[in-house]
Image (cartoon, rainbow, N blue to C red; front, side):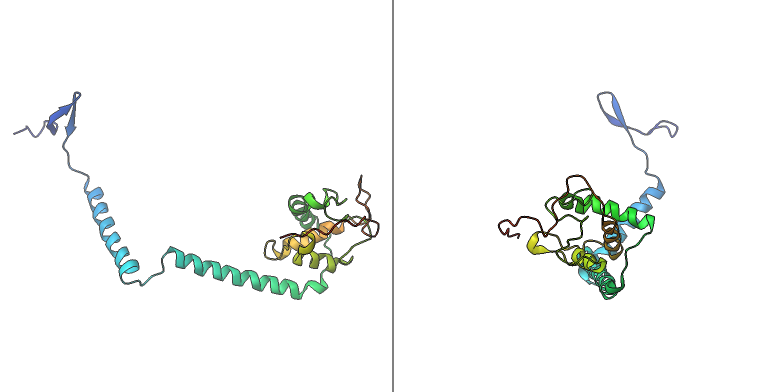
Length: 193
């Protein structure tokens, strides 16, 4: 029998290390028991009684709710599209510039001079030259010419911002502009998937 004042060391040892035989703290033991009780309750509620939604069902619900909100916002935006005007707000234009630089500049050039896509600085616009036509082009894209449909990708405020920023290109003279669309050479038709 060990003296109560002796450390509670067990008899076995390995490499000079002995195991200390002390009791676990009571709070830790009760926490362990509560975790076991919670695990049985969780399994019974979700997997046996099927009373609650599992993660995939919760995800599907959230995704569906998000799509409804997005569709409602786009429908509202499209219904008001006819009355949109280009914004001159500096913050909105800065947002539009950022979106343009990221998404549009690879095809239209950083200054709207046109690369693969048409020149945005001249007066010759294939799909309409007024602001509303530009917004519709951004929203619906021109899939047959390779322009992405941004509806559902960009928020309505982002579409308005980038269209407003593009509107600032009109009349500018960037270096090495692409010829206006009425003078651009026609090439073979390219099919995009």
